[in-house]
Length: 329
Image (cartoon, rainbow, N blue to C red):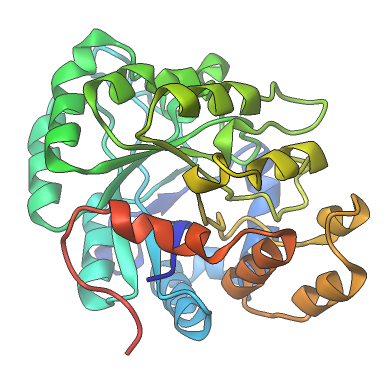
């Protein structure tokens, strides 16, 4: 089964979903462009965003060469003492929303989001495990989660016991408010890996050129130490200057290539222009992908043109806890 391991869903709460979207800073200005990138008008922000965005993503997956997409919930940021940080986030997607979408559509696999400092964190984890969650998504630097904090030991032990994968943002973040920049370092996952949790370092620790620290070398070193650590190539095909030819070459080398998974990061804009400009993609391949209207398929074809093999798309299916069969008939 070919899976996109990194697809965001968003909503504004229409239909009682519990979602909210309150963009600020860079997010406020970037939101209309991201919507346009998935074929929706800016007016969707004030309309029935929950329904039309989910329907659009579902259509993209069904029309793409992948079989399923992991759709991501988004919890609010909390302090280590369990107190919610008011105004700390710019959007919220409840676990129930992604779990419901996954029940209704076999092409969707649900990634829940639970801040481990929440007083109900373990109870919520058990509830979501029973409901079919396959992954837990977090942005440590944006949600204020230091997984090396001993207070989260029992939570991590339960992740390991259940087989629930931990997908954690690493490296640059320029679309959401960052609360703790130091937590962009992949070493934030050290304790989780020592406990036995299978972890995916989203973006493989890469940083925006000349702006943010790049932790790719840290990620590579950690893969040699921890056999349960994987990375994804999400946002690599985006005009965000995260792309580096030297990094791409290393990603494709034997050994490290075996630890990478395919992810798009939609609705982040998808384009091969930087890859072509850097000489990593032929002109005809770039122009061919630019003509693909479906961003999930465009991203997949860009990754193939860059040299990522079929195993990058199918590897995640071997790692997921066995919940349900998904795929196209």
